[in-house]
Image (cartoon, rainbow, N blue to C red):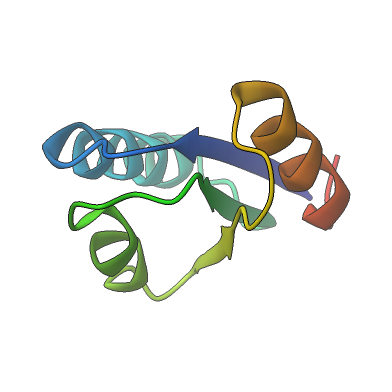
Length: 82
């Protein structure tokens, strides 16, 4: 299984483009075993709500210190694939 890990904070419309791009690659390359993990660093925009509109995206929220390294580490820990 392939894990796509996306981290962000207040990404808004860019997040939709990112998710749509991942799903296009999955479809084009006929990848059957995949997951998308989104780790959010306390967004104050609609990033979390947007991520939750995609049925196959697992959403995790950073509750402590927020920085890119923390987000990547949480994503790697929660990912089920390679």
